[in-house]
Length: 473
Image (cartoon, rainbow, N blue to C red):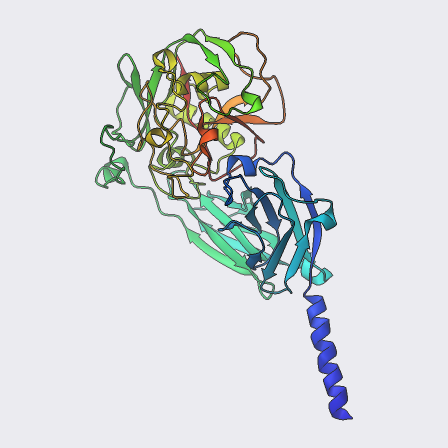
Protein backbone atom coordinates (compact mmCIF):
# COMPACT_ATOMS: atom_id res chain seq x y z
CA UNK A 1 0.00 0.00 0.00
CA UNK A 2 2.85 2.36 0.91
CA UNK A 3 4.45 1.67 -2.50
CA UNK A 4 1.18 2.46 -4.31
CA UNK A 5 0.78 5.73 -2.39
CA UNK A 6 4.40 6.65 -3.09
CA UNK A 7 3.88 5.96 -6.80
CA UNK A 8 0.79 8.17 -6.87
CA UNK A 9 2.67 10.91 -5.02
CA UNK A 10 5.59 10.81 -7.46
CA UNK A 11 3.22 10.79 -10.42
CA UNK A 12 1.26 13.74 -9.00
CA UNK A 13 4.51 15.64 -8.36
CA UNK A 14 5.69 15.03 -11.92
CA UNK A 15 2.36 16.13 -13.40
CA UNK A 16 2.26 19.23 -11.20
CA UNK A 17 5.82 20.11 -12.20
CA UNK A 18 4.99 19.74 -15.89
CA UNK A 19 1.88 21.86 -15.51
CA UNK A 20 3.86 24.52 -13.63
CA UNK A 21 6.39 24.62 -16.47
CA UNK A 22 3.90 25.01 -19.29
CA UNK A 23 4.23 27.96 -21.69
CA UNK A 24 1.21 29.98 -22.76
CA UNK A 25 0.63 32.46 -25.56
CA UNK A 26 -0.18 35.90 -24.23
CA UNK A 27 -0.78 37.30 -27.73
CA UNK A 28 -0.06 36.71 -31.40
CA UNK A 29 -0.81 39.50 -33.83
CA UNK A 30 0.20 41.30 -37.00
CA UNK A 31 2.51 44.28 -36.36
CA UNK A 32 1.29 46.39 -39.26
CA UNK A 33 3.72 49.28 -38.67
CA UNK A 34 6.78 47.01 -38.25
CA UNK A 35 8.68 46.81 -41.56
CA UNK A 36 11.36 44.32 -40.52
CA UNK A 37 10.16 41.71 -43.02
CA UNK A 38 10.60 44.29 -45.81
CA UNK A 39 13.76 46.08 -44.67
CA UNK A 40 15.61 42.90 -43.61
CA UNK A 41 14.07 40.28 -45.89
CA UNK A 42 14.93 36.64 -46.43
CA UNK A 43 13.84 34.43 -49.33
CA UNK A 44 12.10 31.04 -49.08
CA UNK A 45 12.71 28.12 -51.45
CA UNK A 46 10.27 29.65 -53.93
CA UNK A 47 12.30 32.89 -54.01
CA UNK A 48 9.51 34.80 -52.24
CA UNK A 49 10.10 37.07 -49.25
CA UNK A 50 9.33 35.43 -45.91
CA UNK A 51 7.21 36.67 -43.05
CA UNK A 52 8.97 37.45 -39.75
CA UNK A 53 7.62 36.22 -36.41
CA UNK A 54 9.20 38.13 -33.51
CA UNK A 55 9.04 35.85 -30.46
CA UNK A 56 9.12 37.81 -27.18
CA UNK A 57 10.08 35.62 -24.23
CA UNK A 58 12.13 36.05 -21.03
CA UNK A 59 14.03 32.77 -20.94
CA UNK A 60 16.17 30.38 -22.98
CA UNK A 61 14.75 29.17 -26.30
CA UNK A 62 16.52 26.03 -27.51
CA UNK A 63 14.94 25.42 -30.92
CA UNK A 64 12.11 26.17 -33.31
CA UNK A 65 10.26 23.59 -35.35
CA UNK A 66 8.05 23.86 -38.39
CA UNK A 67 8.39 25.48 -41.76
CA UNK A 68 11.13 28.02 -40.94
CA UNK A 69 14.02 29.50 -42.93
CA UNK A 70 17.11 29.31 -40.74
CA UNK A 71 19.05 30.78 -39.07
CA UNK A 72 16.90 32.57 -36.52
CA UNK A 73 18.11 35.96 -35.26
CA UNK A 74 18.46 36.26 -31.48
CA UNK A 75 18.39 39.45 -29.43
CA UNK A 76 17.82 40.01 -25.72
CA UNK A 77 14.46 38.41 -24.89
CA UNK A 78 13.47 38.59 -28.57
CA UNK A 79 14.03 36.14 -31.42
CA UNK A 80 13.21 36.69 -35.10
CA UNK A 81 11.94 33.62 -36.93
CA UNK A 82 11.67 33.78 -40.73
CA UNK A 83 8.82 31.68 -42.16
CA UNK A 84 7.50 31.24 -45.72
CA UNK A 85 4.16 32.79 -46.60
CA UNK A 86 1.10 30.63 -45.86
CA UNK A 87 2.81 29.03 -42.82
CA UNK A 88 0.26 28.10 -40.15
CA UNK A 89 2.17 26.74 -37.11
CA UNK A 90 5.38 27.22 -35.13
CA UNK A 91 6.81 24.82 -32.52
CA UNK A 92 8.94 26.31 -29.74
CA UNK A 93 11.26 24.33 -27.46
CA UNK A 94 12.69 26.06 -24.39
CA UNK A 95 15.03 25.10 -21.57
CA UNK A 96 12.60 25.29 -18.65
CA UNK A 97 9.17 24.64 -20.20
CA UNK A 98 7.34 21.95 -22.10
CA UNK A 99 7.44 22.33 -25.91
CA UNK A 100 4.68 24.53 -27.31
CA UNK A 101 2.96 24.29 -30.70
CA UNK A 102 1.41 27.61 -31.72
CA UNK A 103 -1.37 27.36 -34.30
CA UNK A 104 -1.78 30.84 -35.78
CA UNK A 105 -5.45 30.36 -36.64
CA UNK A 106 -6.23 30.10 -32.91
CA UNK A 107 -5.24 33.77 -32.63
CA UNK A 108 -7.07 35.14 -35.65
CA UNK A 109 -4.27 34.70 -38.22
CA UNK A 110 -5.25 32.10 -40.81
CA UNK A 111 -1.79 32.00 -42.40
CA UNK A 112 1.29 34.21 -42.61
CA UNK A 113 1.66 36.72 -45.42
CA UNK A 114 4.87 37.56 -47.27
CA UNK A 115 6.65 40.78 -46.22
CA UNK A 116 4.63 41.01 -42.98
CA UNK A 117 5.93 41.07 -39.40
CA UNK A 118 4.09 39.35 -36.54
CA UNK A 119 4.71 39.48 -32.78
CA UNK A 120 4.29 36.36 -30.61
CA UNK A 121 4.45 37.01 -26.85
CA UNK A 122 5.00 34.02 -24.56
CA UNK A 123 4.73 33.72 -20.75
CA UNK A 124 5.02 30.98 -18.16
CA UNK A 125 1.68 30.03 -16.65
CA UNK A 126 2.82 30.45 -13.02
CA UNK A 127 2.60 33.91 -11.52
CA UNK A 128 5.87 33.28 -9.70
CA UNK A 129 7.74 32.64 -12.95
CA UNK A 130 6.19 35.63 -14.70
CA UNK A 131 7.14 37.99 -11.89
CA UNK A 132 10.71 36.81 -11.20
CA UNK A 133 13.22 39.65 -11.21
CA UNK A 134 16.69 40.30 -9.90
CA UNK A 135 19.04 43.18 -9.10
CA UNK A 136 21.96 44.12 -11.34
CA UNK A 137 24.71 46.30 -9.87
CA UNK A 138 27.44 47.78 -12.08
CA UNK A 139 30.41 49.42 -10.39
CA UNK A 140 32.37 51.46 -12.90
CA UNK A 141 35.29 53.83 -13.32
CA UNK A 142 35.59 56.71 -14.11
CA UNK A 143 32.61 57.77 -12.02
CA UNK A 144 31.49 60.29 -14.70
CA UNK A 145 30.75 57.51 -17.19
CA UNK A 146 27.26 56.77 -18.52
CA UNK A 147 25.63 53.35 -18.15
CA UNK A 148 22.97 51.93 -20.46
CA UNK A 149 21.18 48.63 -19.82
CA UNK A 150 18.97 47.29 -22.62
CA UNK A 151 19.65 50.65 -24.35
CA UNK A 152 18.10 52.63 -21.45
CA UNK A 153 20.05 55.02 -19.23
CA UNK A 154 20.40 53.79 -15.64
CA UNK A 155 20.48 56.07 -12.59
CA UNK A 156 24.07 56.29 -11.38
CA UNK A 157 25.72 57.66 -8.26
CA UNK A 158 29.42 57.78 -7.34
CA UNK A 159 30.41 55.08 -9.80
CA UNK A 160 27.58 52.68 -9.01
CA UNK A 161 24.57 51.90 -11.22
CA UNK A 162 21.82 49.65 -9.93
CA UNK A 163 18.57 48.43 -11.48
CA UNK A 164 16.03 45.62 -11.07
CA UNK A 165 15.25 43.58 -14.19
CA UNK A 166 13.45 40.38 -15.21
CA UNK A 167 15.59 37.26 -14.98
CA UNK A 168 17.29 36.43 -18.27
CA UNK A 169 19.86 38.04 -20.53
CA UNK A 170 20.36 41.80 -20.77
CA UNK A 171 22.77 44.03 -22.67
CA UNK A 172 24.89 46.77 -21.11
CA UNK A 173 27.12 49.60 -22.36
CA UNK A 174 29.42 51.80 -20.26
CA UNK A 175 30.94 54.78 -22.06
CA UNK A 176 32.66 58.07 -21.41
CA UNK A 177 34.31 60.66 -23.64
CA UNK A 178 38.04 60.02 -23.84
CA UNK A 179 37.73 56.34 -22.89
CA UNK A 180 37.20 53.07 -24.72
CA UNK A 181 33.58 52.01 -24.21
CA UNK A 182 32.79 48.55 -22.86
CA UNK A 183 29.69 46.54 -23.65
CA UNK A 184 28.44 43.03 -23.30
CA UNK A 185 25.71 40.72 -22.06
CA UNK A 186 24.82 39.69 -18.51
CA UNK A 187 22.47 36.88 -17.50
CA UNK A 188 20.42 37.52 -14.37
CA UNK A 189 19.50 34.43 -12.36
CA UNK A 190 16.66 34.20 -9.86
CA UNK A 191 18.95 32.67 -7.24
CA UNK A 192 21.19 35.68 -6.55
CA UNK A 193 21.88 39.32 -7.60
CA UNK A 194 24.48 39.98 -10.30
CA UNK A 195 27.42 42.34 -9.92
CA UNK A 196 29.79 43.73 -12.55
CA UNK A 197 33.02 45.68 -12.07
CA UNK A 198 34.02 47.73 -15.13
CA UNK A 199 37.07 49.98 -15.49
CA UNK A 200 37.24 51.86 -18.78
CA UNK A 201 40.58 52.28 -20.56
CA UNK A 202 41.65 55.68 -21.82
CA UNK A 203 41.59 56.11 -25.60
CA UNK A 204 44.92 56.26 -27.43
CA UNK A 205 46.15 59.75 -28.31
CA UNK A 206 46.44 60.86 -31.93
CA UNK A 207 50.19 60.17 -31.77
CA UNK A 208 49.62 56.65 -30.50
CA UNK A 209 46.93 55.99 -33.10
CA UNK A 210 49.27 56.87 -35.91
CA UNK A 211 51.39 53.83 -35.03
CA UNK A 212 48.46 51.40 -35.21
CA UNK A 213 47.78 49.78 -38.57
CA UNK A 214 44.28 50.26 -39.91
CA UNK A 215 42.01 47.39 -40.93
CA UNK A 216 42.63 46.15 -44.44
CA UNK A 217 40.08 47.16 -47.06
CA UNK A 218 39.08 44.64 -49.73
CA UNK A 219 40.85 45.26 -53.03
CA UNK A 220 38.91 46.16 -56.15
CA UNK A 221 40.68 46.16 -59.53
CA UNK A 222 39.36 49.51 -60.70
CA UNK A 223 38.83 51.38 -57.42
CA UNK A 224 41.48 53.14 -55.38
CA UNK A 225 40.84 52.19 -51.74
CA UNK A 226 40.07 55.06 -49.34
CA UNK A 227 41.94 55.97 -46.20
CA UNK A 228 39.11 56.56 -43.74
CA UNK A 229 41.14 57.78 -40.80
CA UNK A 230 43.28 60.71 -41.83
CA UNK A 231 45.84 62.87 -40.00
CA UNK A 232 44.56 65.84 -38.06
CA UNK A 233 44.92 69.09 -40.00
CA UNK A 234 44.32 72.61 -38.77
CA UNK A 235 42.01 73.72 -41.58
CA UNK A 236 39.83 71.80 -44.06
CA UNK A 237 41.65 70.45 -47.11
CA UNK A 238 39.65 71.55 -50.15
CA UNK A 239 39.47 71.45 -53.90
CA UNK A 240 36.62 72.16 -56.28
CA UNK A 241 34.81 68.88 -55.56
CA UNK A 242 36.04 67.53 -52.22
CA UNK A 243 36.71 68.70 -48.67
CA UNK A 244 38.21 66.93 -45.66
CA UNK A 245 37.10 68.17 -42.25
CA UNK A 246 39.07 67.12 -39.14
CA UNK A 247 37.09 65.98 -36.12
CA UNK A 248 39.39 64.70 -33.34
CA UNK A 249 42.02 62.06 -32.56
CA UNK A 250 43.06 61.66 -36.19
CA UNK A 251 39.51 61.11 -37.43
CA UNK A 252 38.23 63.28 -40.28
CA UNK A 253 35.25 63.42 -42.64
CA UNK A 254 35.61 63.32 -46.44
CA UNK A 255 32.81 65.06 -48.31
CA UNK A 256 31.90 65.43 -51.98
CA UNK A 257 30.34 68.50 -53.57
CA UNK A 258 26.97 68.01 -55.27
CA UNK A 259 26.16 70.85 -57.63
CA UNK A 260 22.62 72.21 -57.77
CA UNK A 261 20.36 70.88 -60.48
CA UNK A 262 17.03 69.44 -61.58
CA UNK A 263 16.20 65.72 -61.80
CA UNK A 264 13.29 63.32 -61.92
CA UNK A 265 12.74 61.77 -58.51
CA UNK A 266 11.04 58.43 -57.94
CA UNK A 267 10.09 55.52 -60.20
CA UNK A 268 11.87 56.48 -63.42
CA UNK A 269 11.97 53.83 -66.21
CA UNK A 270 15.35 52.33 -65.23
CA UNK A 271 14.06 51.48 -61.71
CA UNK A 272 12.81 47.92 -62.14
CA UNK A 273 9.75 46.76 -60.15
CA UNK A 274 9.29 49.96 -58.11
CA UNK A 275 6.98 49.94 -55.11
CA UNK A 276 3.91 52.16 -54.98
CA UNK A 277 5.49 54.72 -52.64
CA UNK A 278 8.15 55.46 -55.30
CA UNK A 279 5.36 56.74 -57.58
CA UNK A 280 4.58 59.02 -59.23
CA UNK A 281 7.94 60.14 -60.62
CA UNK A 282 8.13 63.94 -60.39
CA UNK A 283 10.52 66.78 -61.12
CA UNK A 284 12.64 68.18 -58.29
CA UNK A 285 14.93 71.20 -58.39
CA UNK A 286 17.68 71.75 -55.82
CA UNK A 287 18.80 75.36 -56.03
CA UNK A 288 21.90 75.16 -53.79
CA UNK A 289 25.14 73.19 -53.94
CA UNK A 290 25.80 70.98 -50.92
CA UNK A 291 28.40 68.53 -49.64
CA UNK A 292 27.52 64.92 -48.83
CA UNK A 293 29.62 62.29 -47.07
CA UNK A 294 31.89 60.34 -49.38
CA UNK A 295 31.34 57.39 -47.04
CA UNK A 296 28.70 56.25 -44.59
CA UNK A 297 29.52 57.37 -41.04
CA UNK A 298 32.02 54.85 -39.70
CA UNK A 299 32.20 53.37 -36.24
CA UNK A 300 35.53 55.16 -35.73
CA UNK A 301 33.86 58.54 -36.36
CA UNK A 302 30.83 57.76 -34.19
CA UNK A 303 33.06 56.59 -31.36
CA UNK A 304 35.27 59.69 -31.59
CA UNK A 305 32.22 61.91 -31.17
CA UNK A 306 29.97 59.89 -28.84
CA UNK A 307 32.47 57.82 -26.84
CA UNK A 308 30.57 54.58 -27.51
CA UNK A 309 29.91 52.13 -30.32
CA UNK A 310 26.34 50.74 -30.52
CA UNK A 311 27.02 48.61 -33.62
CA UNK A 312 26.27 44.89 -33.75
CA UNK A 313 29.25 44.11 -36.02
CA UNK A 314 32.40 45.82 -34.74
CA UNK A 315 35.16 47.42 -36.83
CA UNK A 316 36.58 50.96 -37.15
CA UNK A 317 35.95 51.18 -40.90
CA UNK A 318 32.58 49.42 -40.83
CA UNK A 319 29.53 51.67 -41.02
CA UNK A 320 27.97 52.45 -37.66
CA UNK A 321 24.57 50.78 -37.24
CA UNK A 322 21.92 50.18 -34.60
CA UNK A 323 21.46 53.96 -34.38
CA UNK A 324 18.00 55.52 -34.30
CA UNK A 325 17.04 58.78 -35.99
CA UNK A 326 17.02 60.35 -32.53
CA UNK A 327 20.52 58.96 -31.82
CA UNK A 328 21.72 60.55 -35.07
CA UNK A 329 20.45 63.98 -34.02
CA UNK A 330 22.45 63.77 -30.77
CA UNK A 331 25.54 62.64 -32.70
CA UNK A 332 25.21 65.54 -35.16
CA UNK A 333 24.72 68.06 -32.36
CA UNK A 334 27.96 66.92 -30.67
CA UNK A 335 29.80 66.78 -34.00
CA UNK A 336 28.80 70.36 -34.78
CA UNK A 337 30.08 71.55 -31.40
CA UNK A 338 33.42 69.81 -31.99
CA UNK A 339 33.95 71.01 -35.56
CA UNK A 340 32.16 74.37 -35.55
CA UNK A 341 30.33 73.25 -38.72
CA UNK A 342 26.64 72.65 -39.42
CA UNK A 343 26.25 69.02 -40.38
CA UNK A 344 22.83 67.42 -40.73
CA UNK A 345 21.09 64.46 -42.29
CA UNK A 346 20.30 64.80 -46.02
CA UNK A 347 16.79 65.51 -47.17
CA UNK A 348 15.30 62.66 -49.13
CA UNK A 349 15.64 64.65 -52.36
CA UNK A 350 19.30 65.51 -51.66
CA UNK A 351 20.01 61.86 -50.92
CA UNK A 352 18.42 60.56 -54.13
CA UNK A 353 19.99 63.25 -56.34
CA UNK A 354 23.45 62.37 -54.99
CA UNK A 355 22.78 58.63 -55.29
CA UNK A 356 21.81 59.07 -58.96
CA UNK A 357 25.10 60.89 -59.63
CA UNK A 358 23.80 64.48 -59.56
CA UNK A 359 24.42 66.37 -62.82
CA UNK A 360 26.88 63.63 -63.86
CA UNK A 361 24.21 60.92 -63.76
CA UNK A 362 24.40 58.15 -66.36
CA UNK A 363 20.92 56.83 -65.58
CA UNK A 364 21.88 53.73 -63.60
CA UNK A 365 19.36 51.69 -61.63
CA UNK A 366 21.60 51.61 -58.55
CA UNK A 367 24.04 54.20 -57.25
CA UNK A 368 26.95 53.94 -59.69
CA UNK A 369 25.94 50.97 -61.83
CA UNK A 370 23.08 48.86 -63.15
CA UNK A 371 25.04 45.80 -61.98
CA UNK A 372 24.37 45.80 -58.25
CA UNK A 373 27.33 43.64 -57.23
CA UNK A 374 29.72 46.30 -58.58
CA UNK A 375 28.56 48.92 -56.09
CA UNK A 376 26.73 47.28 -53.20
CA UNK A 377 26.86 44.78 -50.36
CA UNK A 378 23.41 43.17 -50.29
CA UNK A 379 21.82 39.80 -49.51
CA UNK A 380 23.47 37.93 -52.40
CA UNK A 381 27.09 38.87 -51.62
CA UNK A 382 27.32 40.30 -48.09
CA UNK A 383 27.69 37.06 -46.14
CA UNK A 384 25.05 38.42 -43.72
CA UNK A 385 27.22 41.27 -42.41
CA UNK A 386 28.35 44.82 -43.10
CA UNK A 387 31.64 45.55 -44.88
CA UNK A 388 34.28 48.29 -44.74
CA UNK A 389 32.98 51.50 -46.26
CA UNK A 390 34.35 52.33 -49.70
CA UNK A 391 35.20 48.74 -50.60
CA UNK A 392 32.93 48.69 -53.64
CA UNK A 393 32.89 50.90 -56.74
CA UNK A 394 31.94 54.58 -56.33
CA UNK A 395 29.14 56.32 -58.23
CA UNK A 396 29.55 59.07 -60.82
CA UNK A 397 30.32 61.68 -58.13
CA UNK A 398 32.86 59.50 -56.28
CA UNK A 399 30.45 58.57 -53.46
CA UNK A 400 30.49 55.04 -52.02
CA UNK A 401 27.83 52.64 -50.68
CA UNK A 402 24.71 54.64 -51.47
CA UNK A 403 23.30 51.28 -52.52
CA UNK A 404 23.64 48.52 -49.94
CA UNK A 405 25.80 48.02 -46.82
CA UNK A 406 23.43 49.89 -44.45
CA UNK A 407 20.22 51.86 -44.86
CA UNK A 408 20.79 55.58 -44.33
CA UNK A 409 18.53 57.89 -42.34
CA UNK A 410 17.16 61.00 -44.05
CA UNK A 411 15.91 64.15 -42.37
CA UNK A 412 12.35 64.02 -43.75
CA UNK A 413 9.12 62.83 -42.25
CA UNK A 414 7.77 60.13 -44.54
CA UNK A 415 5.03 61.22 -46.95
CA UNK A 416 3.49 60.00 -50.20
CA UNK A 417 4.62 61.57 -53.47
CA UNK A 418 2.54 63.79 -55.72
CA UNK A 419 3.13 64.44 -59.42
CA UNK A 420 3.68 68.17 -58.97
CA UNK A 421 7.16 69.69 -59.39
CA UNK A 422 9.07 70.56 -56.22
CA UNK A 423 11.81 73.04 -55.33
CA UNK A 424 14.06 72.11 -52.39
CA UNK A 425 11.50 69.71 -50.85
CA UNK A 426 11.89 68.74 -47.20
CA UNK A 427 9.07 66.19 -46.81
CA UNK A 428 5.98 66.39 -44.63
CA UNK A 429 5.73 68.91 -41.78
CA UNK A 430 5.02 66.13 -39.27
CA UNK A 431 4.30 62.44 -39.11
CA UNK A 432 4.94 59.12 -37.38
CA UNK A 433 7.77 57.84 -39.59
CA UNK A 434 11.12 59.09 -40.89
CA UNK A 435 12.68 57.98 -44.18
CA UNK A 436 15.64 55.66 -44.72
CA UNK A 437 17.28 55.06 -48.10
CA UNK A 438 19.65 52.84 -50.05
CA UNK A 439 19.00 49.30 -48.85
CA UNK A 440 21.38 47.24 -46.74
CA UNK A 441 23.43 44.07 -46.45
CA UNK A 442 20.37 41.91 -45.69
CA UNK A 443 18.14 43.32 -48.43
CA UNK A 444 17.10 42.18 -51.87
CA UNK A 445 18.14 44.09 -54.99
CA UNK A 446 14.81 45.94 -55.16
CA UNK A 447 15.45 47.87 -51.94
CA UNK A 448 18.84 48.98 -53.27
CA UNK A 449 17.34 50.98 -56.17
CA UNK A 450 18.23 54.67 -55.99
CA UNK A 451 14.50 55.43 -55.80
CA UNK A 452 13.64 52.87 -53.09
CA UNK A 453 12.39 54.31 -49.81
CA UNK A 454 11.45 52.89 -46.40
CA UNK A 455 9.44 54.46 -43.58
CA UNK A 456 10.92 53.91 -40.12
CA UNK A 457 9.86 54.89 -36.61
CA UNK A 458 12.38 57.48 -35.33
CA UNK A 459 13.36 55.20 -32.45
CA UNK A 460 14.09 52.18 -34.63
CA UNK A 461 17.57 50.69 -34.15
CA UNK A 462 18.59 47.97 -36.57
CA UNK A 463 21.81 46.19 -37.48
CA UNK A 464 21.35 47.44 -41.04
CA UNK A 465 20.46 51.08 -40.30
CA UNK A 466 23.11 53.85 -40.28
CA UNK A 467 23.62 57.35 -41.66
CA UNK A 468 25.49 59.67 -44.04
CA UNK A 469 26.13 63.36 -43.40
CA UNK A 470 25.38 66.49 -45.38
CA UNK A 471 27.03 69.92 -45.04
CA UNK A 472 25.44 72.96 -46.66
CA UNK A 473 27.67 75.55 -48.30
